[in-house]
Amino acid sequence: MAVRKLSLDEFLEEEHYALIGIHCVIEDYRLAYLINKSLDIKLKRQKLDVTNPSLNTNYAIFEWFDDKQLTTYHLVANNCKIQNSNSVEQSNSLFGEDHLGSTNYYLLPEFKKVNFLLKIETEFNNKEKIILNNLLKIPQVVTAYSIDADTLKSKDNLIFN
Figure (cartoon, rainbow, N blue to C red):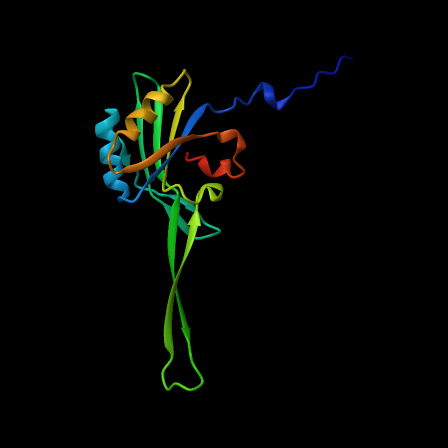
């Protein structure tokens, strides 16, 4: 009797996407508006943010699916700032003092300086260079560059569905 082995590689296709890191200091909704204007797309804020339950973090996400080119655009914030409130009583004080602190968490910890990530999922050859050049023309964008997704340690954080 012949034995046939199946490999998971035959069933699972690797997702094709381009990843662009964006450095800017404006709010997420403002950047989405400027990208919409520059690239002639319609990014829209999703009702549910990208969450990491173990760290209790939320990252804002904007999404748009282009029916004509079968392309999905995701604009997601890379950083999340959590305010910590620690009540500490001092031994020489009648009242306790509140020490407020904050902790920064990152969707891609390898790129802590990147403020936003633009993920472009497509089955066809995309126009990454054209998109990158249009992003660099936005005056509020300090810089933008392609990120090689194959070298990322935390690429599982980029699964949004």
